[in-house]
Length: 324
Image 1 (cartoon, rainbow, N blue to C red):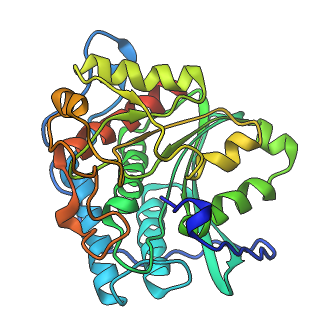
Image 2: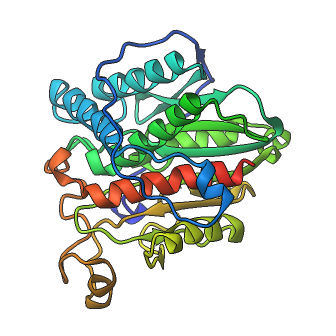
Image 3: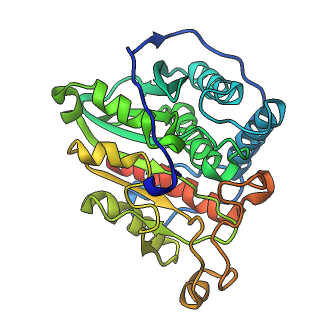
């Protein structure tokens, strides 16, 4: 998640879109699924698959390895970012998605967005789920935002494994240069004509969903999307709160500003957990939701497995529910 504008100088000189169709290389195999975490009593919940946390964590380990091999980060314009994108793209290409890489420029460096379209569905009604893939330069960015990126990837792969044929068209996305001020997602939205933007019936954003002292926060932007996530968490007995810490600070903002319905999930950054929140969710009162936010300690050790599992399953539930 980006810093507030007052804490960061933003530069974004956008250049022409370049669509690249070549695949990258990938490493790491998916692990076996663990316990399901889906609500009971609705047909939509039964249709959505469990997202195996072991698979999501395997992606996180790959992102950690990429960061370790590339100066300790996966930041915009650095080799670790492009290697992260190539890993995601290779997985999606192998699963049958149509992938596109969009190139832009920010702060004197080249950046990239990745989109992946699942064949079929009504192209005039597009449900998008996305996350930013870049880290800050000071760390590997495993919670921020390897967690969202890996869960969105695994949800996309679950679509392919299940042979899901939604009524609406599904598109998944991974954004570059979010940490410089939502540069990649803003560039993508601005590259679309008004008619293309109007086809997006909803954009779902996932930025930090495995915080080690987690909360369960839901965006309160579009009422239908908000209710979808709340219904999921209610079905597994988890109370949620409205997300305020990151409001307008992540990649849903350019979509919202363009009139696209948006929603999403968040497990908390550097705000501190209150006693009331600890009573609902457990964890440590008075400590940040993520003490390693934007730090070198944001590694694979900085993940709460339960929060990652629940939020990953919530992503799948919303994707299935909203694309019917």
